[in-house]
Image (cartoon, rainbow, N blue to C red; front, side):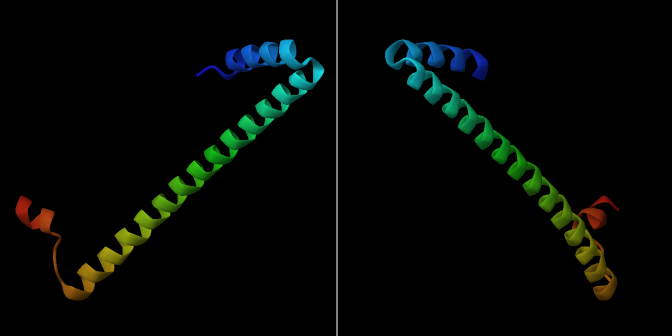
Length: 80
């Protein structure tokens, strides 16, 4: 969805109905939409970083368990 085109249509519709107040409302709505998209984008990056960190810790934990229990992973034993 092209926000610029959507905003242009909304701006002209609100301006024709309510004048300057409608135009200000359209600008406020655009700012809110852009801020929400930025927040969501930041949260997506944060979730990705946490999942990568979790994978690293999981791999380290599995390696420690295998070393302590002297076992091999199931996929490696099937390949042999």
